[in-house]
Length: 284
Image (tube, rainbow, N blue to C red):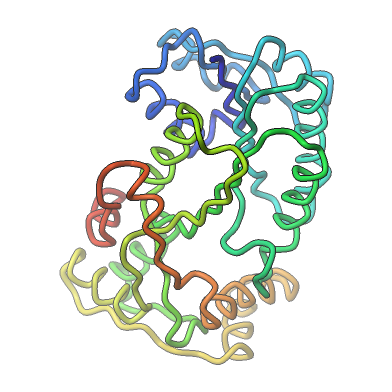
């Protein structure tokens, strides 16, 4: 079963390829789809097939899908332009009659009042309407998202935000990649919507304390309201729209969007997910 991994030059795509290989996938049956093939010469040296895939050029997607059974659609990182780009991949997958499309969505995408949810909800609806056999994998937060907080804590001993007592059930990017690889390789997942999360959730006070233990100094978290948070972000140089968007993510966290612990990911990967402290130490 040949698998096309889109956005294969990114952190998640590369880790999915690593996990596919670790789970017995043959290099010749893995295609790394990237906009610029020169950036993944190392993958080609490992026997991975390379295909130019530009989400803005449907013909490149169609060519890459020739002879492909499984497709991993890694969601585009830039908010506001995702749906049209995702549609190009979904339409090409439908035309190619792929056996399985796996899409990386957002937590509770179809039900959450969360600033990141609408484009993922619309993409999930496009997949359903396409009738392509599919699996939706809704990834909770990557612990690696807090690399900047780790550095800030080490430098200043201070973190701040408007998350309140909200909790985050994060896991490492490698944990999610391993779960995605399992879904791609195994039968029995088509039609499922999986809420992937870490085995434990944590508050931002706990995040600060954990960072303090790692960097060897006291680190505290300052609780702001949304207006204070937006003002802080604007003072740091963000424009009003971006500051509002970032603060809205904290609002979602405060409201519990990322709090749910679901055992599905650890069940599929056959091990516990990576604890917060261990994942943070790995990126220091």
